[in-house]
Structure formats: structure tokens, C-alpha cells
Length: 141
Image 1: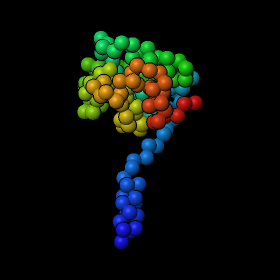
Image 2: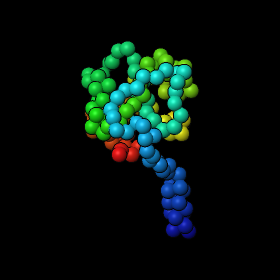
Image 3: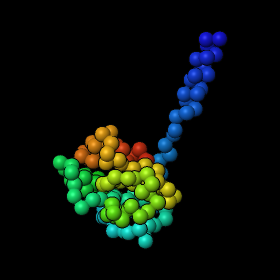
Image 4: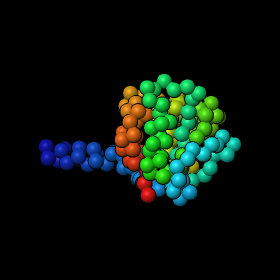
């Protein structure tokens, strides 16, 4: 009986873990490194990343510097949008603080950095931490 309970517990534990399916961004976001300005009226469809920012930065190292270093190293482009503009989109249901990085797959929010989370601070301040986080979700070409 004890073995059965252990076996069932393992099955439940393994069955409840969520697998992250990595994906490629749309091809047009690879090959160059730039912030592409958008607003709530021209949010694209597909697989892409949005950097949303405030008019000020409270981090010791401006997070845009970290994100741009990642982009330059990997030749990836991100969209950029002021946080005030993001508030008028469907993504504001989940992303309630800026700055943030939003990872979008098939027009749906997959993951984002939470500016209020202690767990995410290193991702805003260290290129390697940011790279480790983002490459959990997307492939680099």
C-alpha cells in the first residue's frame, strides 16, 4: 500500500508540472537589433517581444541598457511601447507594472518580467540573468 501511495504521489507531482514549449519569434525579428516603436493601435499578430517602459528608471542600471545588450549580442529586435500606452491593451490585465518585457506567442502573453517582483530584479540588471530567463521561452537563431 505504501508503494502505491508513493507511486500515485509521483504521478500527480509529475503530471502537474507545466512544460514550457520554446518557440521562435517571427523571422522578421531576427537579423538586426532595434527597438521598433508601436502603440496600442498597431500591435502586431504573431510571435514577438514587447519592451514597455516608464519615463523614469528606478534601477541602478537602466534596464533598457541590459535589454539592448542582449538584443545586440543576439541580433533580435523588440517592439517598444510606453507603459502608459500598454495600459490600454489587453496585456495590462496581467502586466500591471512597468518597465517590463512581454513575450508574445500567437498573440497571447506567454511570460513577462514583473517590476514589483524580487525574483525578477536580477533579470533587469544582469544580461546573463535576462538571457537565461528569455531563452527559457524563445530560441535564438
